[in-house]
Each structure stands twice: as C-alpha cells, then as structure tokens.
Image (cartoon, rainbow, N blue to C red):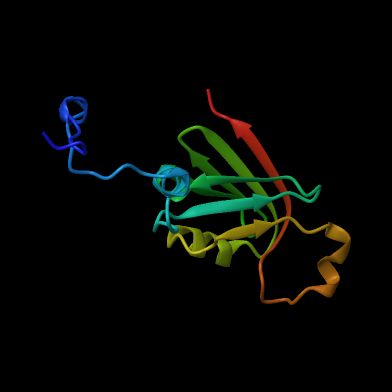
Length: 129
C-alpha cells in the first residue's frame, strides 16, 4: 500500500473534494468584494463633516417644497431635506441618479460661489417610521 495514500472521505462529506485548501491570504479575497459594483449610492456630507449615504434604488419620492430653495427626498428608511439656493438643477440631476456627493456649504460663502451651480446649505436627515 502507498505511504502517501490519504483518505478523502472527510473532504467528500464537505461536498467538494476537488477544491484545493486555501491559505490565509486567499481567504481574505473570498470574504471581500474584489472591486466596486454598479450600485449607485448618494453620499450626503453635512457642514459639521458628518457623512451618510443612501442607495438610489430606495429613493421613492422627491418634492420641491419651496421653489429653488428646498427639496425633500423620501427613501424607504429615511427622509432627507436639502435647503439652499438654485436647487432646480439639482432636482433634475437627482431624477437621473447623477449626483454621487452632495455637500452642505456654510451660507456665508454663498456670495462667493458660481451663480449657475446649485448650493446646498443644510442637510436634514430624519428616520421614517
């Protein structure tokens, strides 16, 4: 009988005796995604530096509460209120899932910003329920 003979009965019970054993570096690659996916999230950054993100696929409703100055976004779990200036263009971009990051700017800098860009001065997050 061959001295190198190894019973593979335990591996057959594990359902796949043909897969080689993985070392520690291979296990990390299996636990993590190798690259980004095509899922679209929108990141909101408040003026105090705190950030949160929500997935566009859970955006159910968007309403311009006050023309050009206030937008309400209702997601399945949270509502987000954006207050600022010239937000009509931002509403159009949100309808097409384009913005990746929306950052709140301090209102005292509004005069220094371009007149053709939307300006968000306040981001309010509210849990639905």
